[in-house]
Image (cartoon, rainbow, N blue to C red):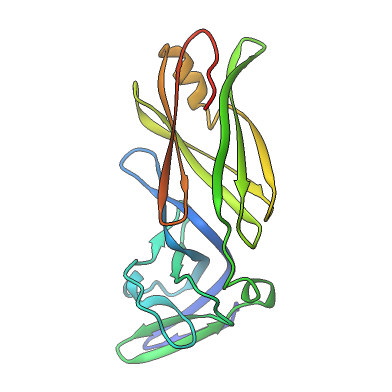
Length: 221
């Protein structure tokens, strides 16, 4: 990984691969969370631009039908490439254009986990006040077989935008988050409460967790 490969008249370099269950991409005005039943290999593409983002894909032994296209993340020249679920012994990143193919093997630390996924679930959630500010307290469990990055967006029925927030959760453990969910808790408080929504990568795609609260006060789910 990191080597230059020539595909047609393009010199392409893939680097910095890592596994993610969900990623942020550009929405209309705010970050948008994407996830599916598999996971993603997030990789940086340098050198020549790809002729098409769909020229970039993963390949696993035996092949697999992946109906999800690569997704540009919020970082320039960074893409999330779908990796199908399954107990894969290995995976490669492939760029194919006009019948020419280049392949990149994954580093050992990534390769050994391509068949493992985190499984996130929200165990509890409530709002609390600290020094006058409203904060979200939320416990997230990872029932999967590898450590994962819990990436989420928060929104409110009274506010049209979304805010992103994330944190790591080790395999087989729970993480207790406390914060403003990217500032959305403060907007939620100013709006007088209502329905607060957290979206996160679940087993088959983006899942939705709702918390209902009226301000002032607290509630728990």
